[in-house]
Amino acid sequence: MGIHTYFRSLNELERIIRCPGKFKFEEHSVSAHSWKVVQYAKTLADIEEAHGIQIDWKKLYEITSSHDYGEIFIGDIKTPVKHSSVQLRQLIQQVEEGMVDHFIDEHIPEDFKAIFRRQLREGKDSSVEGLILEVADKMDQVYEAFTELQRGNTEKEFVIMYRNALIKIKHIQLNCVEYFLEHILPDMMNEETLSPIDIRRITEEALAV
Image (cartoon, rainbow, N blue to C red; front, side):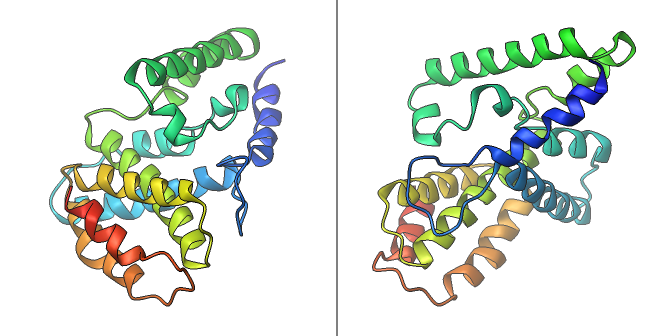
């Protein structure tokens, strides 16, 4: 019981593999994904600050580092499935949030319950920190899918993941998104690839949507 149970539960995130059931050259755990999202987010936030935007760093680190904790209870549900309908996405979120709340009620000491509810909540919202989390989360999908495609993986799901994540990023109104599209993405396109798939064409089509 207590916070020890929470700390022990974090090991489970290392055993949950993203995009299950598909051939991958590299396996990525939810734990590794969460770490990368924090790294993306802090750089994206630095770009926002360079443009005069105030960042609540405590909130940013809380929501980025814990944004997928609920997958301990429901696993990693493939993005195309999760977002196949608004109703399904809302239902999955309700189940996930309900199980996190139940975990907090059962295991977290009373003095810390409010803190854990704040830290483990769904962090994607209209705040600058919530939008940065959304961008960082989608950026990791871009990088995971790009790496697979670049190495010659022809699984259609990675094409869909790459394309949809780029479209989502493009439509988020942040300075860091402009920087990503103007400076980072072109560097990705200039890397060598073994893929029979035309990644540059898919990229251009996604950005035109």
